[in-house]
Length: 321
Image (cartoon, rainbow, N blue to C red; front, side, top):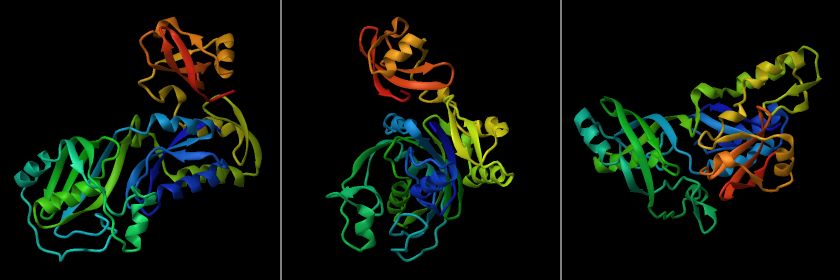
C-alpha cells in the first residue's frame, strides 16, 4: 500500500503509538509519520505508507499551525500540563493588552531553548531520557520562526492562541518563556495541531474511524479481497470487500495533492519506463521548475525528479518500479 493518510491524533498517545496502531489496522509494516506530536497534543499527524515513506525527506521543513491554551501561574518541568510543578502556584489575573504586547515579542525569528523533555540529543542521547533520570540537561538556544502568533482570548490566568510556525519551534517553550517574562510562571495546558504543510484537520480521520471500517467489513465474512488504493495498484488485504474500495480510497490523500509546490507531469509509457529505470528525461515545459512530480496516469506517482540542466530532469526518488 503506497498512500498518505492523515490521522487526528488523540491525547495520550505518542506519535509512535499511532504508527504502530496504523500498522495493525492497515496490515502494512512500512509506515512513518511527518512530524512528531507530544503525547498530550492532538490533531494533524500525517502518515506515509509503503514506498511513499520516501517522501518524508520533502517535509522535514514543513510549517505547522497550532491552537492551544497557555496557563499562567506556575511552571512545570515538561513545560506542559503533564509535568510536575516546579514553582509555587500563584494567582494571576491577566490583561488582554498585556498579553498582546508580550506576544508581539515572540513573533518573527527568535532564539528559543528547547524543553529538557524533548527529543533533542545530547551526545547522541535524547534529552528527555536524561531528564527522566533527573540528570542535568543543558540545551543551547536555537533559531526558530513564529510566523503568526494570534491571541484569541484572555481569561483570568489562561490565554488561548493560534500560531503558525516554522519547523523546530516548540510551543511549550513559548509558553514557558512567556511565563518567565511575566515573572509568574506558565505552561502549555493544551495543544491542537490544525495543519502540517498542505494537510489540515479537514483531511484527518480518527484511528477508530479507520479501524471500525476495516473491522466491520471483516465481520461481514469477506476475509480476503482485493482493494484498490490511491496509486492505482491493487493489493490483497484481509478484511474489506471490493465494493467499499471507493470508501477506503477516500481516507487517503490523492497523490496529485501532495507537494503542491512541485509541478506535476504525466509521463507516457516510454518516458515512464525511463524514469522507473532511473534514467534522465527531457521536460521542455518545466525549464524553470527545480523539481517535478512524475505520474503514470492520473493517480500513480512514480517519481520525484530534479532538474539537472536546462530541461533535463533526473529522478531523485523512484516510487514505483
